[in-house]
Image 1 (cartoon, one colour):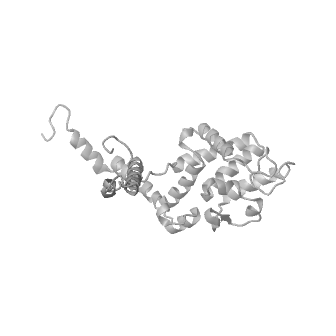
Image 2 (cartoon, rainbow, N blue to C red):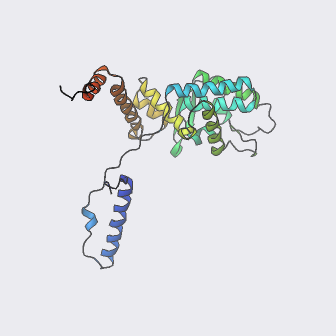
Image 3 (cartoon, helix red, strand yellow):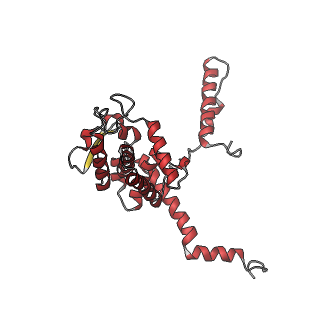
Length: 259
């Protein structure tokens, strides 16, 4: 299966099926052994999370702010608040959309978020994110339909919040305007960017784990693999010794290598 180019996940699923099949045969008295039991499971390859560069995120935010300046209104201000909050906090989509107005009330520098398993955590809130949310709330309070407790209510559902699908659509629209391939971006990609950029700028892995709400630090460590891959590419492309070796391996035009 490896030679066929199939993933380790596919191989693991097929092996599991064979093991269960032979367990059934043994239990029914149709087989005296389980040949699949001695086959070692393939190592699962961790898929690196998709992320954006700091320049891409900056461009994304700039486009959203430019739109808010040229087309002032609730929708533009909401888009800025959504993007600033996603990148500043690294919240999961469900955590962001279910935030209440009370969570950002006052002049606090952090959010108290209830994540998976009902676990609460504190997440710092940046100045730009607070300003964006403040400007958005100033306009939201004048909307007759926005009477619920959610920070990002839905104008179509009484008492409900903005849907995941709508958030996905909004982010893709602004990505297209920013010159970023829309298929490369989602709210979760901004969460990945939050973690990757923090680590790239010297943040402690344990602190990033706490802000992301990961129960196990091994989940957070996937972001270190993203940084390692970037560093390898950076050395291969930019280090002067790497460039010299590449030229030397190619050899002068019209001569054999080593002459």
